[in-house]
Every structure is written in C-alpha cells, then in structure tokens.
Image (cartoon, rainbow, N blue to C red; front, side):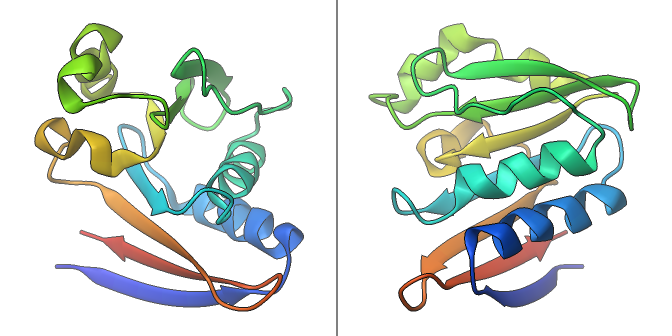
Length: 145
C-alpha cells in the first residue's frame, strides 16, 4: 500500500521540523529517496531527520564525498546521509558501496538526488519530493510503501 502525504512548509525551520517528525516513525533498515531541485529543502530536511534520530553532530551535505555516516541512537546502528549531486551517471555509483549500505538492517539511509540511481534503489522505500511553492515555502510530498 502506498501512503501519500502533502505538506506545505513556510520556512526552512518548518522543513527541518518535518524531518524530525518523520524520524520518529522510521524503523531500522529504512531507505529514503529525496528528490527536488537544488535548494529545494532536501538537506534542511535531512538535518531535521538526523536530529529526530538523536544525532547530535552537525549535518553537512556530503556533496564531495558522497556519503557521511553517523551513529544513530534510535536504531543503535548507522544513519547514512548520501548526496549524489555530483554523480555523473548511475555507473559511477558502483564503487560507493550503496548496495552494502542498503543491506544494513540497523541503518537508516537518506539519499539526496536519488533519481540518479533508480536502477539500484530498493523497491521498499520512502520517496520525498520537494518543490518550490512560494518565496520561502516548499511543497513536500511523501510517498511510502
């Protein structure tokens, strides 16, 4: 069953808070695909997600290293923040170890620019789409299976 939810956030703070709220419901092994234009709120959302998972470290987008792991209190495993913005094509993702990360039963993984690796994304995942709505507002559409 697919669960859809649409939310309008009126500030970066509200986008971050939405991430925190979602974190509470996440179970171990969950993969989250994030989609949207540059600056649409994906990293801000991930910051809230991490905070909601009990991660105290400062969340910085891993644009140049692709993946940043964090210890996750909620799952007693890892939280992986993946940013594929600089990925040229899906074949470039082969050496990143994403399949191994997806297989970690205690991990939660958030993937910015997930559309770049459609072919290797697990079918069971949460997809979140970010769209500019108005000046500081974002439309966030959450699709879960």
